[in-house]
Length: 210
Image 1: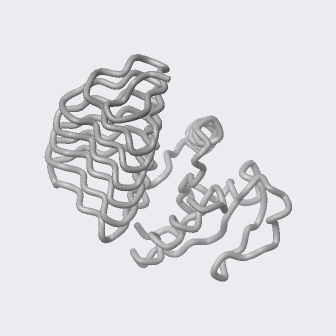
Image 2: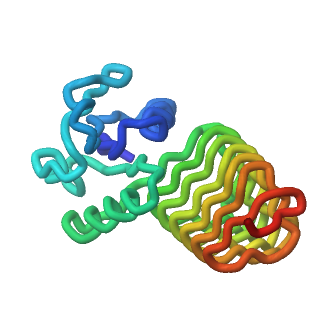
């Protein structure tokens, strides 16, 4: 990775992404964020220069800069991915902490955020735009769809299949080769022992729909 990076989003996820890139000796050019109150401020001496659609900066992406999307609100995240793909003909790069462990036989797509302690096992698959917080484990042959967020310390057991846009809170266990349907939400600390249907919200040990 030779190009400097523009980070979309100057919140907590953006700050964590900055740390990852700096730990990997990657230059961060600037932040872009739609909160105009932040414009002109700095995070660890990196400026917040404008909004996420500021052509004065986005025009460099795919030429002189790469992009990373550090927005955890799903619709905003998907919107920036689409903009980068449609206008700039690029996809965001990955931000992978040097203390993450990713099998050489795993498949990861674009725009992945993987913080310290993340483990992605052999022949696991991780789709576009996933967010894996600290110490999340995606065990061997598990599959994550696109835009899945997995909270800190959560464990996705081997062979589980998590469909697109699922939110998994911190400390969750998906206990076996189960299926979690598109858009489902799993509350923090839950233990999932049966399939979760599309769009459902579940919580508890064992997890039940609420």
